[in-house]
Amino acid sequence: MIDFFEDLVASDENTWLEFKSYWYWNGESKKKEEGWNELLKDVSAMFNTISLENQKNPKKYIIFGYDEKTKEHNNYFKDKSGNNIDDLMDLEELKKDLIKKIRNRFSCYPEFKNSSELYEIESLIEIEEIKYSNTVNLVLTIHNAPYLLQQKSNTGKGTRNG
Image (cartoon, rainbow, N blue to C red; front, side, top):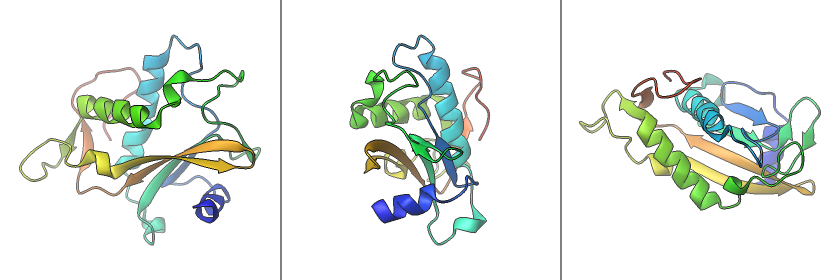
């Protein structure tokens, strides 16, 4: 995975790859809900993207802890001030929270298997730590799905369809 990770961080951002230097909220944030809204916006945009340039590996990636401008790596679980972000310490819990929020906010479009439920959404999203260059980066991988995410309602500032 390290070689593949090195290939990703050597690439430019594009329709299937995005870099985030730091997480969406800090360790002492009172704006966590706004951060979740931004994360859901980014995940839904990536989820709904079909990349023609990445057909050999039709997955999409958001990499946390890497700044593409400075080429510096940061520990994804620390904010800009160096404080730990407690919500990021348990990746299983983070994925459960993310899936729950996706299910609450989105339905599938078009209906899949005669349902608007997000069929096997848990298997379409992976979260993995990568130890690299004396830091720990986080890779959120989104697999291609047989449906798009459609927002159920305007449930938060900064969200949009797909």
